[in-house]
Length: 270
Ligand SMILES: [Zn+2]
Image 1 (tube, helix red, strand yellow):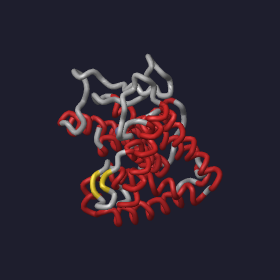
Image 2: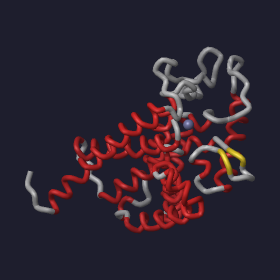
Image 3: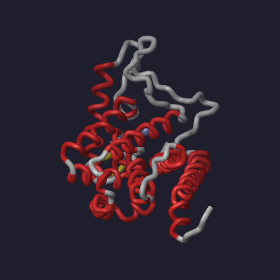
Image 4: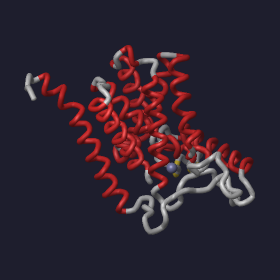
């Protein structure tokens, strides 16, 4: 899938999950907390594609997420891609094909999603305020690129960076204090990464979802849908059907979450 759909699927999953948590598990959250969680999850749902670099010196190419912060993030993507291809080559078994590009390898695994999730929780609890603001900054930047892709392309990386920084700072200050510190941020990052893997599994190329469990002398078996069912990246089905489905889920879940608070505010009994 392409960046915008990944981001949207992340936001939709988080909103739907928050609705289920509020409805069935008696776990209500404030509107701010839900919005921050949805944005972080949207950003996290782009994170695995940070293994797709472009032309660093020209500031071109790469995935949506690699372009988030201009040349800086393109450079990071280049490094991650090289590390990924290195890990692939070092751990591949006899039946795994040779690879010269690391896209859809290391960062497209469940251990990576767990590392990002627990790593974020660890950073937040260990370093507090600045770690929280830092993680929010990156996730918001990714989310802006994904959810408002046309705007972000027009605005350019400087505006995206400034907006993300300001949003991260304000979000931190507006979040209820007992939620800072913060398993929720880590959970949203980790869930976002897993949602990304699910989004790539429905394409033909697939992802190495079983890694590091070897199957039939292959460590990096790509699991995807068979051709007949597979969704082609960037196809009409993806950009219209999936986009609509994710938007509807987000809106319905969002309405379900906000409705009780609104009804209460206007003193409407149900
Ligand atoms: Zn991907």
